[in-house]
Image (tube, rainbow, N blue to C red; front, side, top):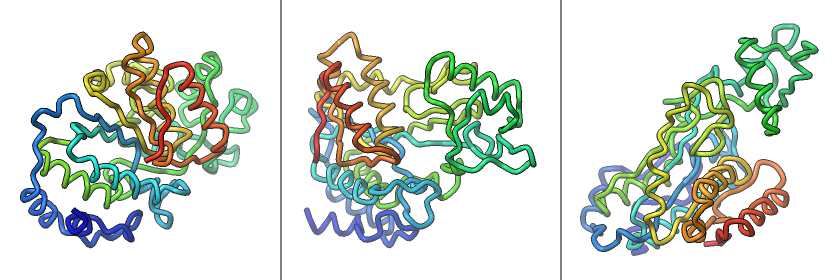
Length: 298
């Protein structure tokens, strides 16, 4: 087992640009080590959120999350050690454009320069011309809706996870493991692209912050599969944004049936926070109290 692991995963390359493992070799090893899904229909459904190079690579990632390299190592090991019991894997991938509403291009200073990343956008700043939206009607309306719904303010992020770029890709050693899983289990990974619409933020993998005409019919079919698994495991980045919002949205979807929410296992040491770790842990505790989810370490 260990010999196979070391042939498909190079842990010292987690988060790095280079990948010394050849995919042909991974597929060959998986073919010899084939494990079928027979009699595993009630096994584990694993949801992995935003484990992409821009969040993991500490040197070249656009928005690296401190601790993500260690998180990925644990996720990879979890998949390998539970190959028999994991029935399906869902990978949610941030998928953006340079002109997404939360990127600097869409907001300007009075002198015409782009707004710096991590700037908080408020209606007051727009009305005072401290911050000028590129598309005044659409962007101002969006910020108004956030305020009306008492939601968190829009944050400007560094350009990240731009569709088709290297930073958008699933972290390479994790991708090795996913490829091995697919071939060994003879089942495809479910890849969920989220955040493709330009005029709304989308932290969680199920729905955007504000539903727009373009996102109204966002494909959520995969979420309805989760209820069929004996256990649901969820991990990924960032613990206080994409991961938390995904867990919360799943809980809300199944709020009428605690028999389902009690299946949810949040892998707390397989995700790291961008902001205050203590504060977000309290929010997870609230979900635990309300929905009966489990907060675990692997």
